[in-house]
Structures are given as C-alpha cells and as structure tokens.
Length: 160
Image (cartoon, rainbow, N blue to C red; front, side, top):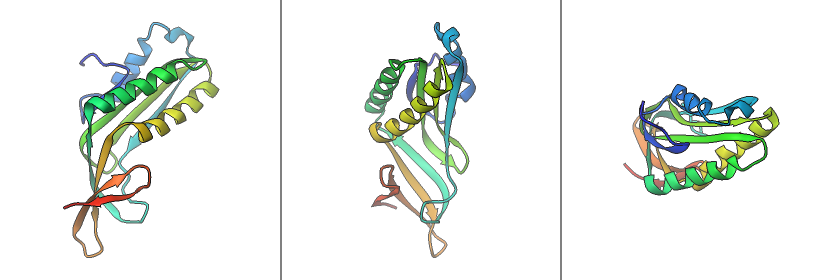
C-alpha cells in the first residue's frame, strides 16, 4: 500500500476501503473516537430518467480536485468532536455496482459523525472538479454517452 493522505483523487483500484480505515485508525487522536461513519458511493444501474446504465467514466482536474478535497476535510476536522475526515474519489472506467468514492468520518459521538459525513458528501459533490460520463442504453438499443452534471443529475453536453 502506498502512503495515503486524508483526501484525494485516485485511479480505480489504487486504494481499498480497508486501506482508508487502516489510515483513519492510525490517526494519533483515534483514541478519542467513539465511531466511524462510512459512505461508499457506487455506480447506480439506472439514471433518474429510468435509462439502463452500462458504465461510467470519471475524470478529474486532479490538482484542483485534490485541493478541494483537502480543504473540505481540513474544514471538517475542525468541527467539535471530529477526530478525522477523509474523502477518496476514484477516476477511470466503472461498471454498475463498483465503488466510486469513500467518505470516512471518525468522531467522538454518532451525532458528530452523521452530520459531518453528510456535509462531506454534499460538499465534495459541489466543490471538487470531478466529471462523470454516463454510458446508457438508448431507446433504440444503442449505447449513448454524455457528461452528467452532479448538480442537476441531467446531461450537460451530449458527446459520442
């Protein structure tokens, strides 16, 4: 396992949830934690409009995405009762059901953990320049692809 930071963009397969949990448990302040909350984002097999998803392709403006994820985690670690916050997002090609992102928050109490976990997810979706291309089965049985806006859950720009 390569050394990991508390946040970042990684190629698919470069990091496991086990690696992230091991890193969180290695935090010198982990003895203050009473719980760990985990969000694992996976590839959904159907779009909000009911189209069947074949695969996703994720890309990132890596330098800016890493800065955004670091900043989010840094902000969240300053909150009362939070021991650690980590966000690890993957890029590459993904099949339905595969992991896309790990968000892990360790805190003194579950109330701290749950609210910060939700904030972490909402913030990375808004603030990190990570882009998703969806490949779906079209009405005529052909695979169509387009870039998706996380903010709207709708196609931004049609592209083949």
